[in-house]
Image 1 (cartoon, helix red, strand yellow):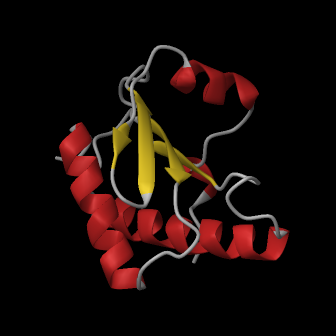
Image 2: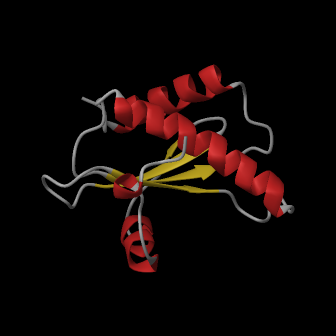
Amino acid sequence: MALPKQHRLKGRHEFSKIFAGTRPAVSDSFSLRISRDSVGAKATFAVVVPVKLVAHATARNALRRRTSEAVARIIRTGAVIPGVSAVILVRTKCLPETVVLERELLSLMKKSGILN
């Protein structure tokens, strides 16, 4: 299942706001950039897979889909602080199994302080 629409980042201005002046939290497979501007709003996320990392669109979409599904599961648990906007940048071509992938995202989100 994909990331719900109300939890997706929309538009270039939101991306540029997050990338301007934020430092990434980094793990082996991901880089996470966060903005905490919206108070009381829903948490929003975006997953980015660079063309330099994976040349074929089908492979990029598969990586994006798997990562978005793991993020959606984390959101459904209610652990994410409301009002957080984040961009997840995939840093590796070969992601681990879904359970390991979700565990790595959880640890990265804990490290960055966006979980309850």
